[in-house]
Length: 622
Image (spheres, rainbow, N blue to C red):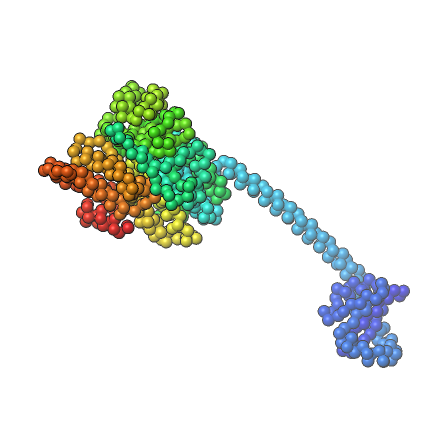
């Protein structure tokens, strides 16, 4: 052979050289022992040396001549042995073909892998487009179909029914804490209401705490720093006690619809909030636990969606609250709403309360050029008809003469313009029926007379309480634990809610005109008490503003007004008639907050007696 391969085949300390055709070095490389080491000395030879021969190389070198002579015969025999092991030329050719086949298999594997990756990327892109199409059709990815009972990993943590002030604020708040929130609102157009336009300073502080204070920006909201109260040609000016707060803290008045739209936009800006238009028709219950809701989309499609927690805050007209509470809705009066344009109020940046006959009239700015007027018509009086002109006549002949002269012309002009609207004022105490998996909030849960503008303050305060309760719960699927936390919510909300609710109901009763002598004295005493200023005005106005939500302070001021009224009656000279009026005055003062405390304290509280319950609850909560 012209080209040879030298194979050092070591066994123990021996070494041998074998002449093999050149191509066989590939085979030797494939079948070499793990203990072998390859040296490519020349293009046509391979040196294959074992570790044992390397260790004995020095001694083998000394005897190289003798070994070479002895190996001449061994080379020939090993050459024949190798040929036998390879099996003749046909076996050798088969092995070469196997090497070529292995190369083709490797190439085929690489090409197949690249093709698989290409197909996977195309499939993933098509799936992503399909999801985007589903979103455009307002069908959330995590909504289950009616016949799907499997667990959806991307399902919402919380379903919120209603996207008003309470619903939108709650959606944003829970989503900021990492919850997946689905909000279903009956109508996503801008609301047009005549109430819900005054946010007290206490409510604004809650708005700041929730990170939503920018929602009153860019809607021409007006700062409100106090109240002006007018009665029989006299007036007093009461300012909120804001000295200890930042200069930005004050009340805010605005168009309700603009405020709600800003809140909705803020909530929808978060990626884990799904806001869609639809009408919830029922709650989905299983073994007494609310699992989700059934709703109808704006296209008429019936869908079901599931979550560990469902929050119902669909407003005063809620059709779902009957399964979550025992509603006792009262309608003490109606509001007649007007908008006065380019009107300058007697006190800038103040709300105005006129103690008119038969009931109060409110004025407050809702923009830089508009003033809202709300005329209260008691439920006992027939509401005049707008269609036949009775309402316009009532406003001009009964209400206008009692309006301050500075705004009387603007008031009459607004009546003549004809844009008069009415709405019932509802009052509903909080009387929940704790239900696993669901909770009520906002006006769907609790309403008070809107005279004091405390509704939004209560709603935002409730949201702060619920947020703080849910924060430690990483998983809302533990129904038992969640239910116990929700029951705590009803207790923790009482100081703020009961104080504002009681004050609203009591002030409305006091500010309404009456033929009863004791009631008249109480109304006069309340006005004169606030006129004293100092602690006598700061205390009540701090309660009204939501800055001091302590029931004990409320009860103390009510009885202080009663004592003040009795003192007015008995001085300078008491009489039997005045003494009797004083007794009745204290009795009326006792009953005014009493009825409201009973209705706003949990129904589980035993009735120890009406007046006893007032003091008991006040001491417990304080």
